[in-house]
Amino acid sequence: MTDLSQTDRTRLRRTHERGAFDRATIDAILDVQPMCHVGYVMDGKPVVTPTFQWREGDHVYWHGSSASRGLRASKGAEVCLTVTILDGFVMARSGMHHSANFRSVMLFGQAFVVPDAQKEAKLSAFIDGLWPGRSAMLRPNSAQELKATTVLGMEIAEGSAKIRSGGPVDDDEDYALPIWAGVIPVRSLTDAPLPDPRNLPGVEMPDHIRSFRQDDQAR
Image 1 (cartoon, rainbow, N blue to C red):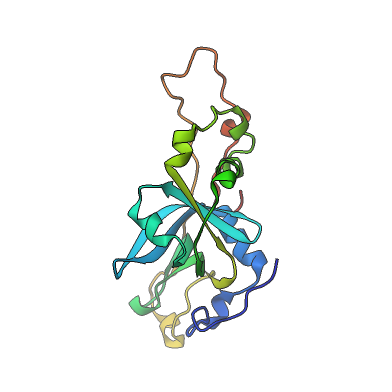
Image 2: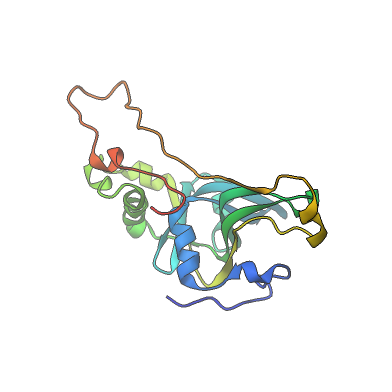
């Protein structure tokens, strides 16, 4: 695991103190938030697609339909993958100083196609990363399902994290104003699982479902 070097694309022009290039910070954000957005160019126009990502060592992966024009356009192309976690709304004493607390990662790189022989293992790693042990209890993927699925990957080689935390930072003279300021914390919570009404009688909820918590802070 090697920390990332700053490049012209990843260097922060403003609020550089919020930037981080160490892999520990970057990996922690990737590992806690599966939802990401992948940006690429298709037919000369920018496109951003929401999907799930997962990290294995020095690579991130995402998947989708083999028929997807976006995934086909991403094969071997330069892409930008971003992950963002909203932690709070920062309420200041002026409109311009309102802000947000957040953790984010932006990665740049060339997407590659995971070979068919590795596809099953990558998809199992994706499922088990969220629900440990679940892939072993599932029906195996059919050959047709695997054929219809493309898994893309990208090396974690160029990118950065950006983090904002804490309260508002107002102009000195504004602290004398009778205006409430502070932070409205935001976090993601997981509710109790809802069983499928077509579950067979006697099928018990597994521990990886019963204990699952999609917590913003840790997974």
